[in-house]
Image 1 (cartoon, rainbow, N blue to C red):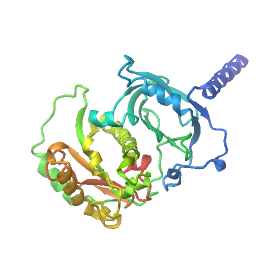
Image 2: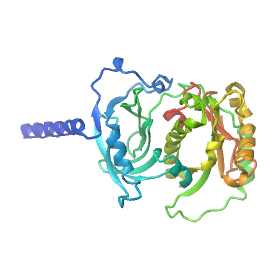
Image 3: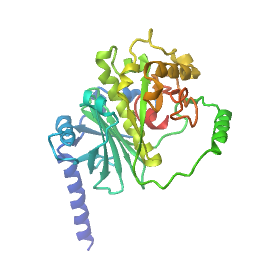
Length: 349
């Protein structure tokens, strides 16, 4: 009996290992880490200590995902494989879940977002973003930590897979939304709250006007409007993960408006925002609101936000003012370590 059990166990292990090696998209990285030219995001202070590295065959992976957004195809979902933090390969069924309103998506067809459900782990769900700059994912688990996939090598051929667990207090961070202001605003609004009918499972879509400082654009290699795709790909990565949380917890989906490209800036000397040293201290709230009101127009968005490249914190601008003209576009987020990407900016902040 013991011999049979041992043989069965070995067979399962060999099968799983062999599957990981033979997967058509992913293979275990065999290159030593010291020889890999790492992406600059790997140097961020919050980068996880424990990661698994996999090599991605990007082109067929991308084509498989694009096959379900081709208007000539009746195919609406596809099954793809993803590595997990245990070093194994899992399967997911994906459908498109764009973060761009139709006009913006048509303008940038190579930047996409998808939602999926687990096949190997039927309780898992996934959010995935893809562009010419690579792939990023967030996998939600019920019994285990959530997991992330991000580019590890500079050429985005090698990817890291890691769990969401973090050491608290590793990064300096300041939430500059006043506690007393928060309590006052919530108290003032409490009397007008109404109990909504039970959710039907449909998502409430809100129009997002997302502005960025020139320093944010420059971090991702964009120095002029001709490189706006680099900035939109970065925004899409963050928005994909954020929507994974908002959709799950609030039944809300944020959709980026096409006019967002008008409030993406490239020159730190001429953008409408203060340097991070003063902007992240609170100056950005008013500057962002003034910018969105003047450039986008209050009737053309529901919520506005700003991404900075540094500064070390965030500010909601106001609480409970979504869709409220004159204040709905005043929140901002900026990292402490000068690296405005990765799970710490997407989720932790």
